[in-house]
Length: 239
Image (cartoon, rainbow, N blue to C red):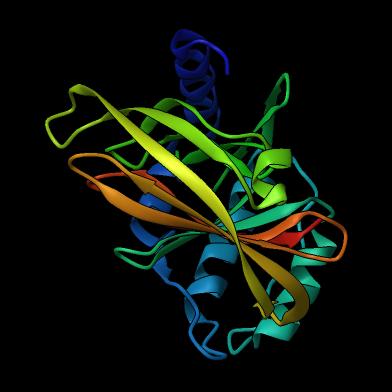
């Protein structure tokens, strides 16, 4: 993971280039995560993402229909021509669609149409920005260890608390196989096998869940961010 100074300089540069648009995007960019075919929030996130990409000079999809279904929304997301993640804070159901923004070694940063980013190492969440109580950096397991569905790992989170102060959270975590599921990501179904990660500390207990598709990628996951933000759902929409 890069230094906080590098990340902050990168974020300031991006905010400056997006200008007034990003201020407007903050007002309309987050909606409720789609439930059982309800695509309204995902559509709102798409419109913010598409407008942001257009402003920054990237290829964008044709406008999505106002009454888009998840299946038709997937078609316009494919036409953007970029990998896309759907990121949802489960505590508030705030949703954003994100495309690749930067690479620092094995860690890839994904950005929405607002000044929010998530940084992933092979699909494992290691940092966030723009959410408030962010993960500034963390010590997280490797993809291989998660995929093995066995063993233990000592996690360490360095995050901002509700008072914007730096805090540290250390937990002992263990992995286990969790069976098979069919996971639907924006109108596309995937056969997956589930891996759970149970983490405990004297003050916090949570479970991360990872759904691996046939290719071995994490197609969907629920991963802990911080005590204030709780869990984030990450879905790989477009590869």
